[in-house]
Length: 316
Image (tube, rainbow, N blue to C red; front, side, top):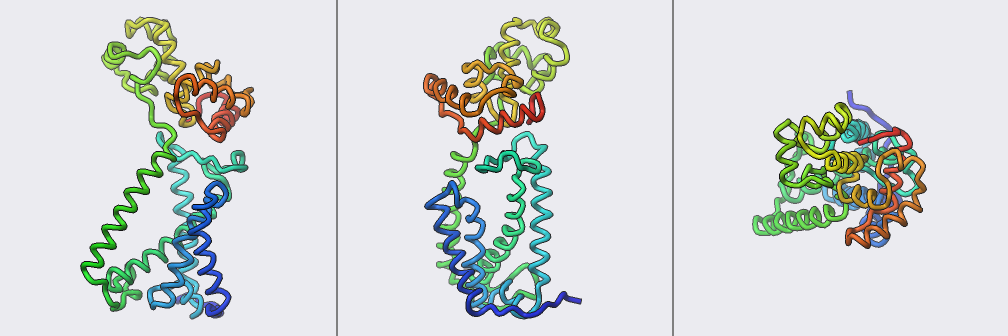
């Protein structure tokens, strides 16, 4: 049987709160993104949920008003479970999200700050509210659950085509803009490592070395001298590439930032253990200016140092 609870009065303060909070979640992240970034997940919840309630679309507010909290609780639990599954997979992934939330660098489960897990249940509510709004407005009331599907006035085809085109253009533009900001580094390639020219890369491939990970692992196992005999490459060349790879693979640093660290006098991950974040950041700013590279953020430097202190070696 369906879970029942005491009906909640929606009309009045609760409705105004949802609309007002949704509006703030839409505006404040654009005005103060550094501190209001977390509110962006509420932008797709507050206002759409109010519209759903008033238009007759599936609504969590209406569920509470009629004493049926089951869907709300399922979404909250499912969102939390999805978040835990996502972060566990993300933690072991080769290319992954590394979060640099101000003030929470040392309070994490996997890569996510503890408080960040509260965002996943909220995200599931926002996903439901926004999807219900889209289905009601664009799909003529057809929803994923049969009990929610009900005839509604579908948007005229021309207006639908315009809305769909605008949504696609907005999403594509946002994706490109976010990628330029959020992607701080990419998986390193052999050709990007110090000392690795085209001939060296080709020679390494003949012995099965195709990635910086394989190069680092082989040198760790064989030693520089034995590896050089096997590949017929100079020891200085291999040593430079090995040191560069070790740093580039550490906590998503990437080859560009690793090159800055090498130029700043940090040649091994263990050198980061005793480093002062602010001091190292200042040195990296100076080196980046010389190379013409965009410098890493202080939050990134703290992530590298923290990971080195925890693991004492490369941590991905």
